[in-house]
Length: 57
Image 1 (cartoon, rainbow, N blue to C red):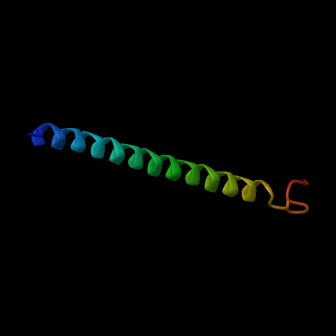
Image 2 (cartoon, rainbow, N blue to C red):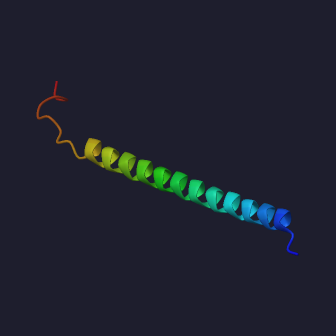
């Protein structure tokens, strides 16, 4: 007769591992997105044209 308790625990452990992988993938995606957004914002800030005559005294 199969040991259903052992089979259940093995399944539960593998499901927990799968959930951990999915959470890690989500967090990495969020990090990558936030890094990309900050780069775009940074580039936009650096590409502003300088005002003429603002630093002339």
